[in-house]
Image (cartoon, rainbow, N blue to C red):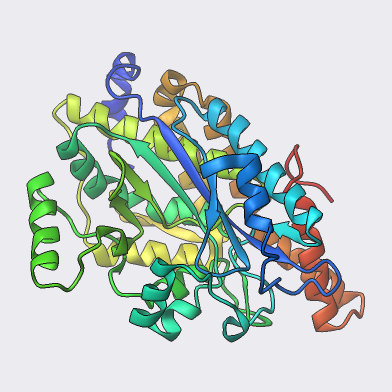
Length: 394
């Protein structure tokens, strides 16, 4: 972070410019309360009951063991909090009505993708036909955050700059340490699965909205990709809304952690827009360098040492978070999300869902519990914490 000095000189302007409305999408897993395994098929009436309660804010995902929710357009993180808590509670209560439980975790400890049953909808049938086993392996959940940016050129300009911060947000959201019955040794295994899809990973750099549209035109005219929503980058202009959407994040088990990730994203965009208004910009770094930080975020989460490429040093992630929070403070004040941005310091030191899942698992093993039973304890912890109103609990 090498522009802090020049930004502090312009703090008084931080409240001007775009406000970057926010919308949050979350994906949840459904589990059987007896076995704690994934509920691979939904009761036919389950989604109808969800829609009765939540309308179009709830929908299917690719697999029957998944549910997706999305807030409306929220002017502030406070608005998003109220709606997100309502959505989580409604899905959890409806799951209980139908003999299931809901967990907010990007992977299930032991579920195997081959047991998963896709939803019988045309979009998902096409996806399965095109990508075969790669699509079937998507027994994973994430959190997507949309930021409203009306100016399309600004949308693309900010996409090229905000990529630098994607590893930081991934580390703070990590919740996928297990895959198919194994402790993977990674805090975020979900990006490995997503990374097998074509058109995934970090986005390219575009000079303008026309540059982006030209690429989409080539893909469409050749028939290679006719649906822009099938560009599964970590960060992309939405195909449906005037937003810039981040897709890199795991789903946060604690809603407050997810709101902090959204607040950081909103404040980073405000910071970058302020730079632009001051005839400055965040430096572009080679994608290879950002990918190194992304790998460290996947492997170690908040325990990582990550690079500050401006200073050319590797430092503990918590120190990078401290510096980022100070850099963003005037912008967070203008957006009304100081408390959420400050909470990133807590997350960087307390650990994320991935860290706590591993603590529960290893504590059970140390008591002499069998491996599968230890993973059952992880699921029980996820069931309790996914709807905990006050965040982390025992």
